Length: 322
Image 1 (cartoon, helix red, strand yellow):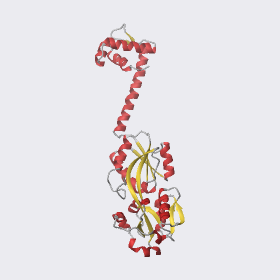
Image 2: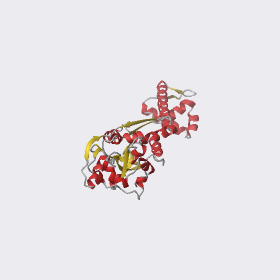
Image 3: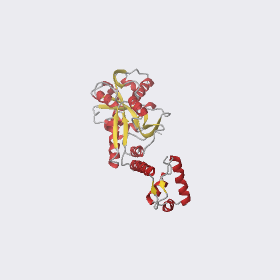
Image 4: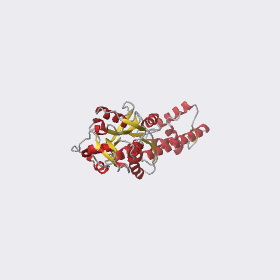
């Protein structure tokens, strides 16, 4: 009904078909024909052509009021889009597990907010299963995780990579025969575990030690099971937890050995009373990705956040595995 409204509004503003035609860069007959089509479509006259200057009819006045409302809505929406594109407004919902929420994302979010202070960023901390459910439903824009999500459902953006380590309380007797393989927390933070010359420990030294593992289904737990199975060891699991940082903290009190990521070892404030060991297994390497749902509209806000996250910054432990 309002297709061609710009023709009507120009005549209304100029109160002249000839001046409106000039402003619109069309001929006066073409403009008159276009307005007659609109009038035929709505079933009433918009202009009283018997007066000079041309005047609106009663129906025409209502039509113009409606046009002005439409134009106002269009202008406000255009301003909203401009603000979104210039990142003056917006919201970003990010999900992560405890490790990334506590040690990795705060620095990225801080830099993003410093650059775009008008964008609201919300961080949801949970386990992988719950985060994926929220990502699938659209409640989250991104999830950062080291778990492999389905590429038929989710698009992934490479963030960094990690290596898994064995960490053992210093007081455990099993450390004695493994002395030549020991690494300190300072060694891990310097990246010694990544050097080819650093030897991997035989896991048989720790076959009888109690283990603090994550629950089944967690990526770290899946890899830990594979690593122990490769070495023909059935782990003595005495406690299962949901979060890697919690398992690390419990182990550091001397409850048992555990497997952690070097990301956690490098960022966590505790762990000085633990010893660390490189493990020889392909299952110790994993990539960390930002995931978003396939076919979801990627806003400018999301694009800029990923750019900041992917900048080289040393936030993760090592170079990404290609």
